[in-house]
Amino acid sequence: MKKFLEEFKDFALKGNVMDMAVGVIIGGAFSSIVSALTDNILNPIISCFGGTEVGLVTPLGNTGQVIDWGAFISAVINFLILALVLFLILKAINKMTSLVKKEEEAEPEAEPEPSEEVKLLTSIAEELKKLNKKK
Image 1: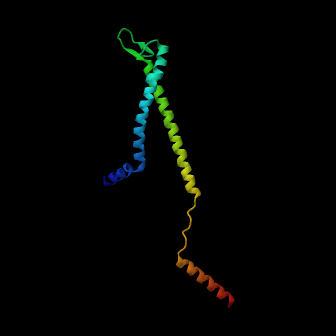
Image 2: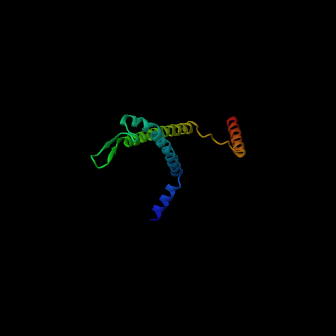
Image 3: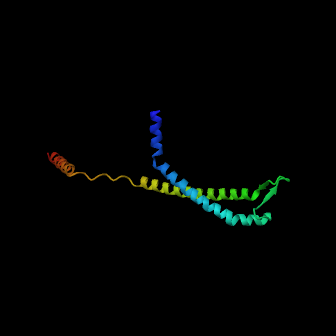
């Protein structure tokens, strides 16, 4: 159980979960914009075809119940718009991520500058090699 809690803690505190939380909040705000678009612009256009203010409806006998096709079409349009926008956002994020990975792979790590002691020892070794060749 302790290992499970540790794994959950690691998962919950990773940056990806925080990014996802921000995405959910932004998605909720964006869904209200899309709902306003469909309710105030697209639904009146749909209602032109249905001949009523509500939209396309089919009455169910004398019960007073109706099938609201306009609301269904509006919900489908909401879904399609949100899915398209999320697809485009994820595609852009994946593209940026792949560019960053390519840059990281393209840049090999530079070797650190040798210290003064290493430089001095290297020069001594070279001088010793020269002396040994002369003998």
